[in-house]
Every structure is written in structure tokens, then in C-alpha cells.
Image (cartoon, rainbow, N blue to C red):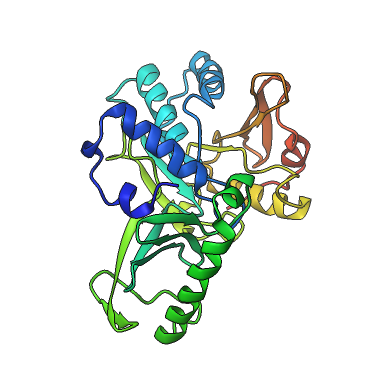
Length: 314
């Protein structure tokens, strides 16, 4: 397993393009988040969704400018979407792309005795690193057991527990890179690191905010976006119906009315068949209701739930 210290603290220019892509794929594939998901996203996974969206809006003459992509993961597919929009609408179209994700960043905490721990905001360990040997914070794959992950993880967790007790962190994260502490007889340093892809073409203009859609923040986003896309998140296998409805209502209120567009997509993977994207494009009408404007491969499973939402009034 590639250590976060090795991969995230070195400049991307340290490797050639092929090596960087290979290391990034391996790192994100092994980084298991508390939800059980990983940060790995294959390039081109949502290409048919990008093309479907352009096919829907170009005949209408619509010129959306403000975009929100929800649950961007590593940001790869968001970056590709922005590229397709620039190609179709022009680099000078004045597009703004905002992303949101539950874990767009993490903190690399370096302790004495050769221990490094990559943690999320809630201080849940994502990766342990003892002397340069890294193990996942969660053993959820056969490969993790084959590499002795449970044994080394137990040792690392024991040391991590002593550290957190000594610093009296109690589930909070008061550490900053500017305020080093002393623990286990040595200096403790903290470094904030991005968990977005290091190969983003539009990394300088793509703004990604940390947010849980089911516990939303950013009240200033109400009515702020012409288009919102959510891919591979809002599905009954991930959330109960009431939670899905809650998330959909949050999204609807963030659309500019009338005419705001909500693009929901899901990648269906079946054994022996290539992945297939399903999507539905919804439009917020003058009455404040979301109506279906187009479908890809039959549309998404949650479409009836979207159409049944109460009108959105501001």
C-alpha cells in the first residue's frame, strides 16, 4: 500500500504522467473511507452522462453558467465534465464549477516512534504508517488480510489510542500545522492534505467544499446554481427513502428558479457486461416542481421520488 506521506506530500512533478496515474489509482483504491467507499474513480466513467447532458441542452439554446457537482470523490469525473462543457460552450463562456464531497481533504499527523496517521475531520484513521510501511485504517478486503493488516493495524491503533489519550483530543481535531504539540516525548506535526486527484486539468478553478448532503451547510447556495449533478449517490441501496427525499429537497432548493436543471445519474455494473450509465435530467418549472426533461437508458430509479416532491418555494 502506498503511504499518504509518500504520495501526498511530494509535488506531482516528482513522477512522470504514467507513474503518477498508476500511483494515484493504487492509493485511492486502497484508501477506505469510514462509509466503506473508496476514492477511486475511473477516468471516463461518466462520459456518456456528459454527452447526454450536452445533447439535452444544446438544442434548447440554454447557456447555464453556474454548476454544482455533488459527491465528487477524487474529482476526476468533475474535471472531465468541465472539459466537455468548455469544449461545447467555449473556454470564454464564464462557467463556474463548484464541487462538494464528504471527505475532500484529510490531515496527516506525524508522531514520534515513526508513526504517521492519516485522519478525517472526525479523527477517524484512514491509514496508518509505521516507518514507511502503510496499512489501511479499515480491513475490509481480502488483500488487507493477506498483507497482515489486522495485526499491524491493531498495533498502530494501540499507539494511536495512547496518543489521542495523551493529547486529550476526545474526538475533536484542534491540531494545526502552525501549532505543533509534544507527545510521546517528541514533536507532533500536522499537515492538511487534499484527497482530490493530483492530475486535475482544472484544479486551479474547481472549488470543492466539504459537505454532507444529509447535514447540509452553505445557506448561500439557495437558488445559486443553474445545474446540479449527482452521480452514484442518491440510490435506495445507500439511503432509506426519507433520507433520499431529504437530500433531493436540499438540491431542489439550490437550483435557480425557474429553469434550474438537476442531473441524477447512476452507473450500473453487471458481471460479464460493461458498465452502463443511467440518468434523468429534471427541470425546475414555474410552479416550483421538478419535471423530467430527458432520460438516458431509461432514467434513474429514484425518478418517481423526485417527481413526487412538493413544490419548492423561496
